[in-house]
Image (cartoon, rainbow, N blue to C red; front, top):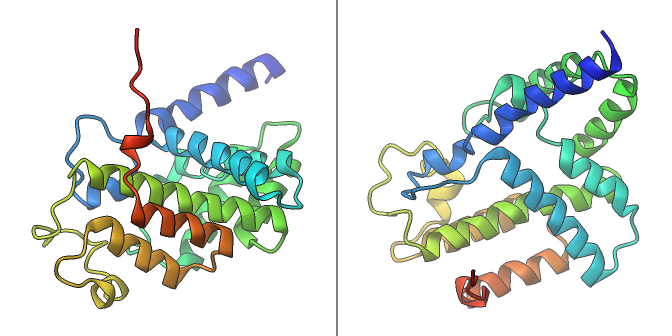
Length: 217
């Protein structure tokens, strides 16, 4: 395979990420004309990494963090977007790592790209921890965004696998909004640092749609 063909072939493969809606929003029953794709999520994670580095001055290689953000969903080209309640973390990692290894096979820098992908998954370096937290924060912000648009009805989620996760059931209290439930769940499940916790607290206390200036033609 020529270099030109390998580039075009790989580009064609990533179109699936443009065309695939994030599974979690479907499981939650998000009612909206247009729902976030995997590619949009990737872009938002990368931008959050840049913003977090800018505002909190993390001592990281930001280029590497953005690199991780861009490639962290590559496995979903092959295996799709698994929900956490569908498959165990170790099983998902095994399947996803195999998929990424095969996907990158024809690239000259395959081993380097795969190493950065695995570094993100292992979550041990400062870069991997920042990228991972940005990944979860992107989900939380989007959740708040959809919540403000009243896209989810908490009273009619009998078919939602995500909502019936025991940890979520324990946290949910009648009258809580969808985003409040998600924030509580993420704070309990993930080891966010103080900066990320501050952003979640800000999201809880403020409307975010109001922050967006109208776009004029």
